[in-house]
Amino acid sequence: MEKQFYDKELLYRGVLPIDGFWKEDGTISSAVFKTRPGEDGISVDRQADRSPKEALLFAISHLKGAMVTITVQDVHDCGAEVIASPIIGGEEKPNEFHSILVRNRESGKLTSGQSKHLSRVAHIVYRPE
Amino acid sequence: MEVLPTVSIATAPVVTVATFILSAVPAPTIASHAADNVTRDHVSWNYVCNDCYNAYTLAWENSIMYNNHKLLSNIQRLRGFGNFQDNWNGYGAAPFSKELLDISEHILMNLDHQPEVFPIAGGAIQFEYDRDDGAYLEFEIMDDLKAHCYAEFPNGIEEESDMEVGRINEVVNEFYGEAIL
Image (tube, rainbow over all chains, first blue to last red; front, side, top):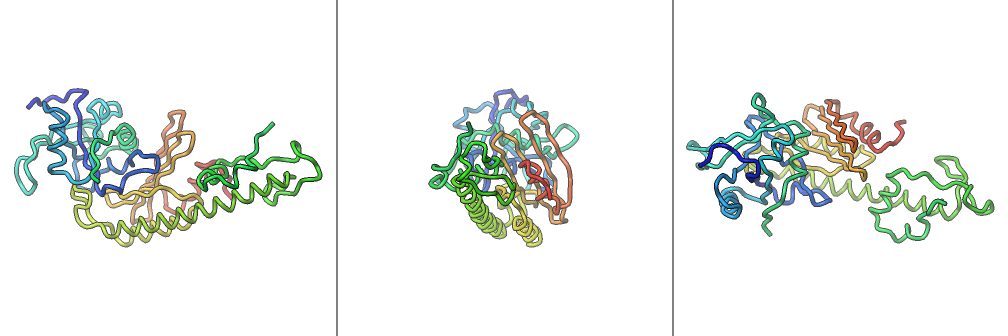
């Protein structure tokens, strides 16, 4: 798999509970892109060298809820970074596409402005009935 | 001449009426109306056309109804967060403390404008406000009675600060351009 991220590469983030993050105007809340304590950054699946459909099918096979995408360019536009963080073993299911969004190389937690920016540019690509 | 919502406002959807009031449109004054068809507004103390005054009063009542409806809906939603179990977001989020939910509910009940309410995986509750001109305001409510406030304005300015939760209503009112008493 290509290690470098490319600008148009899609990043997939699960949204659960399904009705928990939708705003009245149809967009999603920035809360989708906020971390929990102890989390290194916002977990996403990278598209890598797969087609969008293939990447989506993989993402919904292990992430519950709805699915939104942003691009690597979207992440850079707000000054944040995306870092490959494949899950190899341990308690979690292995996922070679796992990556994290961080504020910068020194700090994990996104700023409120970065979270808001990402929620504005996110596209809803899957929403189960 | 100012176009007044005297006819359409009675049948307009509640949200539209609330928006009309919340945008702080000043009540029309006597200047544009016949002098024998006026009353005195109890808030601004200006003379107001009777038809406009009635419409304005109706809009005000509807905005209160809208706010009450939104408050009930928010409280119901907030209490629903209390049912979230471990890993409720699929990324390992912990359940919410009852203390945080109680604090958030108390804040909601004391707000002049009801927000949209969302859960944060970090163990906080988020209130969001969107103004018609694109301005945005959010609060992250923590269980230590602190809130993190973030705002964006159409001119590109961003503001961020930490505050006591007791200041939230004041900040929201400032956001909507209303006088703080």
